Length: 376
Ligand SMILES: [Fe+2]
Ligand SMILES: [Zn+2]
Figure 1 (spheres, rainbow, N blue to C red):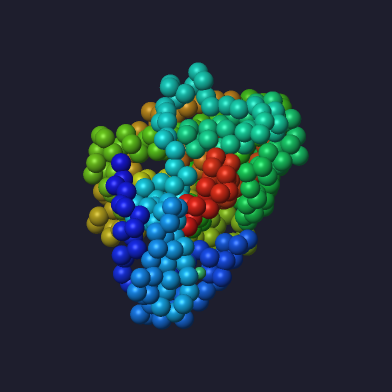
Figure 2: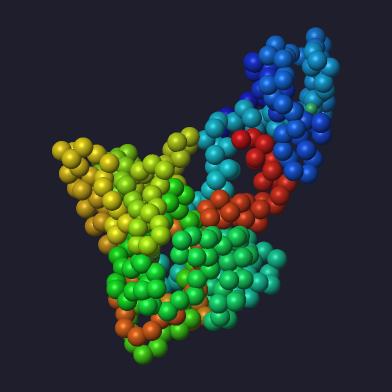
């Protein structure tokens, strides 16, 4: 449990400019946009409370400053400011307790919520996103097998991300775009968008039809579960995959060459609270490992162990028209086996920040979400 200081103790923090900067009054913070209105660096550096300028009330403390301004700090806000940074990060990320899974543990009852429940129940979107936060994926049975219904489903979460491949997509495998996804080839477990600084947070696939052929089973792997296993069995490999950076690129389109702002490790952690927040794993889009060539062997050895774990944890399922699959692209890897015939597939990406924002709003409501923002 985080230790919670007495709320009044925060008022002793110095320099007091921190408290003055966080005044919540209508002069200092816009009531509708919640944006800061004061110019922080016009506040005198030696800002301080007036002598006898602090008055305790039932809900908080009223403070008069030596420049005449008056502020009110609720006890709840003061208590939360005093919390450890780690517990605040848990709120900011909308973290829930994840359930790790393997192919054999999840196959018989994968997380699933019907289209009707999402579309009609007042708690439908919340329950849906909670499933995705908990398991990293969910099926949505009873969805009309149309691009329109699928796009509407994505729009319930947030804006569909536009990329060099387009926004909402609806395609039949024909290599119209320069990427293996548009072929009939099998694709090993991977996360998408390692070539972006900010990979998409969610991806949805909806198989609309598959005619004149067979194959094309989909696989998912719980990347966080695999990372937890790696941490247990080979701490050094975990450390290497968390620190050695890897270059990635998307160069298949004639008119683009995309790379992230900096090479990123396979396992990305929140630098403040230390939790694993993102898995970036894409063999096809990997460029060089960012290590001196005489040290690069260590990365390959660690990545081999990681791959063995991923392969043991694969979960395979045949996608069906009417049952889209949505998954957390920062946690769950996906792939598919090769297929014959024509597959028509639609879907799209949603940014991670939009996904978490929607989750927090649906789970907590705006009031609670904003209280958390105020605490940083
Ligand atoms: Fe993919
Ligand atoms: Zn104010």
